[in-house]
Image (cartoon, rainbow, N blue to C red):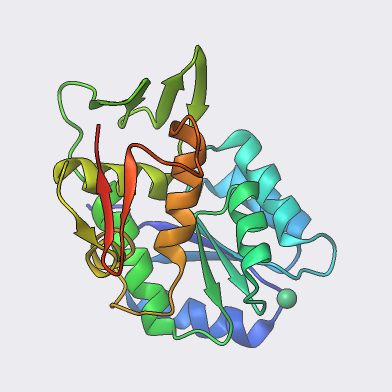
Length: 230
Ligand code: CA
């Protein structure tokens, strides 16, 4: 018997919860929901979801805080924030709080499901016999353990950071287009307005470049995408 993947929705707008729940259950997921941040954190501990959809504006606490609390006890569960805001500053703040991704309301349920499928397609890769170690500059990255060691410090990498690095590393030295990254890592269609990939490149550079503003390893290929130079 195949165990259903559980998705936790933390959202206080009932029509959004209902719409998502119907669509996700139709896709074969098990859905658990909470309408307050506190209850969401408790549900996450109890249900151990495979992914979390988290609203930014909740009645009792804001989504950033919920995200930080979730991350305190689970470093890896993919968290997608649902937000009505689209400002870049909010996105960076959410990503810093530990969110993996954003969708801006009103969003398409089909697009959200495509993202969730991509998460599980990549997360469901059979584990290799040996840990996947990648060296980039002075950083030693263990893709299986989601960790990066540099300058005597160990840092955790989020789900999408690992997947983005993995894809760039598979094609090391070659440019990989933004559209291909968006499609393979996030399961999304090409879009010139989607800044997801760029936001994650910023995060990765902060973690593995000596001078993130003058990167030597994750290079921008102007008008195209990115290239990893180890
Ligand atoms: Ca809300």
